[in-house]
Image 1 (cartoon, rainbow, N blue to C red):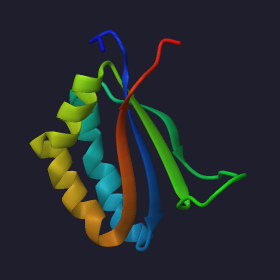
Image 2 (cartoon, helix red, strand yellow):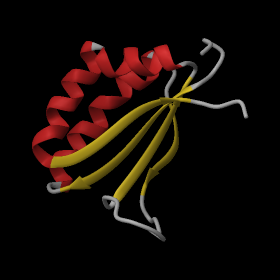
Image 3 (cartoon, rainbow, N blue to C red):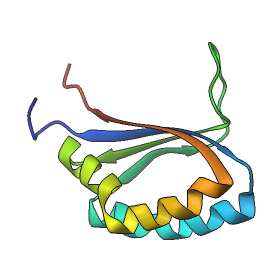
Length: 100
């Protein structure tokens, strides 16, 4: 594995309280900007053609896997996550890109 590969967050989210979730969305941008996170996919609509997933899918690209992990663990994101947790159900994977 190399630092030149990008890192990604892939999240599947069901939002139980849309108004409460807005606080999370407003807060998470600080951490994403700090680690150069860029939304590639954000929310709906989506068409599930196989299996089961939550109602929202989010994909965020980071310059490296290390940056993606550091963003998740930083104080700014953990504060935002504390706003998200009570109002949504989230599955989140941090994964390294592939040069193929």
